[in-house]
Amino acid sequence: MKERYNASLVCRNCGWHHVVDHMRIIICLNNVGKHIRSLIFEPMMNSHNFYDFMNMIFRYYKIQELYTEPLEHKTHIHKLKLTSPRDRIYKNNSDVMTLYGTGIKFFETVIKLIGCFCNMKCLELIDFMMNSEEAIHIMDKICKCNRQTLSKLILINATRCPCPITHFAVFKNLHTLVISPQNLSETVLAELGCIRLRHLHILQNHYSIKELSLNLPNNVSWKKLKQNNPKLKIHLEIESRKKSDVILNINEHEIPFHSIVLDNPNTQVLWTTILNHAMNFGRTLHVYALKGLTVHYLEKVFAKRIDETIVKFCKLCPNLHTLMIRYKLSTATLLEIVSTAKSLRFLYVRRNVILKKFDADWLSVSDWSPEHCKWIKENCKTYEKTEQEISRILGYRWRMLSEKEFAKQTIRLYV
Image 1 (cartoon, one colour):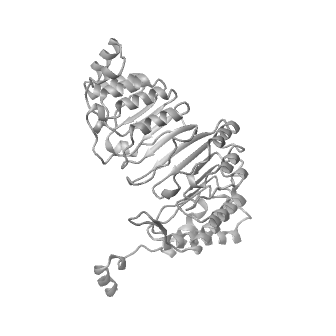
Image 2 (spheres, rainbow, N blue to C red):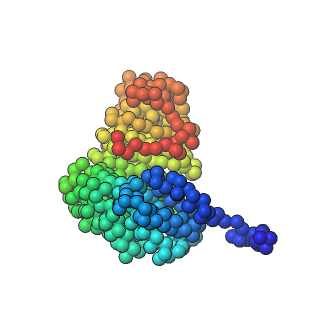
């Protein structure tokens, strides 16, 4: 013990590490295991602990087979969430993805654990970065055990390389699917049009491989999907933490997006990008969110802000009911937004970056009537007046958000 302590003074990797306490886990499972309905494995920094804990859960339920009625123990768990340990996913300075961990043993344990439960309604596999053979194998197991009961399936970065997952046709009760771009294809979309899927989320996060970010099915397949399943709502979610990250290119596609959420605060979203989104997807777009707290400098000059762009965006999106903007705007612009977007119900902005002013530039770029101009001038002088007037229009008590509230705000996609 003394030698270990001395070594930790030189190298922190030689110090203390969290380890799995097998005895406590056994006692806990024996006492409350039969009452567990959800199993959530959050990302750990030590994949061995993750692997060890999964094995203990698997062994517990295997033992239950000996003392319970057939399938009884398998129907208790309704939700299983597995997020890959962070020491299996590593990006060096050149952004090259490398996987570390327990290799095939880790993968086999995941499959065994999924096979323990035959009545799941929700399954989440996040950032596992499997190869094609592993992905097909694990999907076969999911189909075998949960094809009748599964209503929500989340597969984020299921594979490292392009690998269309063509198993969805067997999930007759699937309601929500979250998938990454590298696992989509024309064949996959054709399958999704044949089931009662209601929400398709295309998600790209900061662990997604950059080289794959331009691959999406062609426009014809998206049109056929919407024709075969007209009640389906398609959502796009982008999560990024680096300026160098390649964002999924959607401007060349005719996809009927219901919502677009960009959580990339380190990236400056250009006004041309926002207008392209409005022109390409404005007819179907209901939710548009620029999430996160910006780390770069925000211009105060009207000509360098996106005030005019956001108002144009609202005019091109007649069904827009939720709007979140992380950039600097003026109180006059907020009033113009709520008076332009007739369907708007939820508006989220950061109080800390809102300018308390009337922009004279609006007079030269818009065709306001004297009454409308007077109304904006009277109500943009203070935050309180602006909030009161927006509250009157939206029909509930509305206010600007603090930095902490804005960062934690949840977007309602299914309104």
